[in-house]
Amino acid sequence: MKNEMKDIDNISQKRIDEYCNQVCIKIDEPISIKNEIYEELNTNIKEEVRQLTNDGLNSESATNIVLRKYGTPQALVNDLAEMYKVKKILNKPLLYISIISGVLSILFLSVFYLWNYKIIPNQAHQYTNYLPNQENNVINGFNEKTKKAINIGVENNSSIQAAWVGYSNSAGEFNEKYDYVYPNKYNLSPADYKPIDNFWLKSSYYGLSKSLTNSKVEVNAQLIQFELSRNVQLIGAILLVIYWALFSYWAIINIKYRFGFNQRAITLILILNILGYYIFNKFLTKKIQKV
Figure 1 (spheres, rainbow, N blue to C red):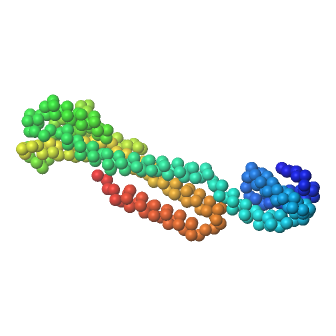
Figure 2: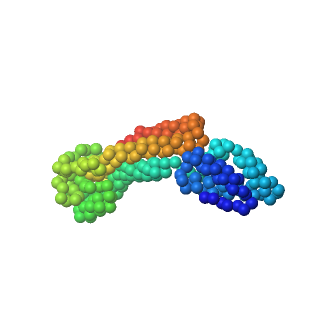
Figure 3: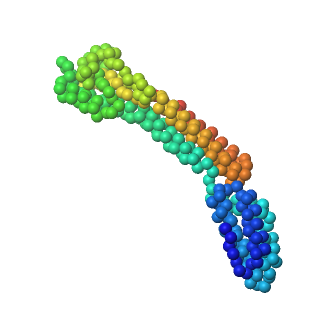
């Protein structure tokens, strides 16, 4: 790591090299950065000494002037540390893990709320479009056109597993009997259906009624839909907590590394975390009620 210069005597060169070594020993950085600092610092000092010797000073005097200008090794270390801290980010793996946790958290929570509170109610409500509108479609049982529409309604809506459809002679009259079910492998009673209940999915029941045009007859439907279990929401919430914890810790140690203990910045991070939790709790858990 020597940079020999003909116009600088050996004693001055050794003083410069020793000064650069003392600076690099005090720097808490990887070897690659220390070598980079050594080469750049050594070159700059010798270049300034050479300029002074070209102006007529001897090597010893020129070296004394330049080294006094740079200050003590510790003072220079403090200046260099500030310079290189800008280029360095501590604990990058921790940052990457927190980002991955945050992305997965958003994915799990978004899918959970979108599916359970948006898609399922919308598809159930839209199913009324597949139910008959005219009384002549239900008298003496559902005709083939009506059955086909009921079947298509199940097939076209991904959340619906089965549909039981029947009718009553007057609006508001409860009718336990259903006249048609799709898929046809199920019995006419929803009570005989074995619901899904596993780690990821569970069955939910959704009742519909539709008054026919110019008639007292009312069509009733019982839908079985599958919804995402609370475990999906729980995984998303845990990942969100992991993200908040890891990212906050990463931000704090980098602020302390870059600026020293900065109480204002650390307090701001904590406030943002509390605000983030409030928004999550307010708009994603309490405000949205299960249909």
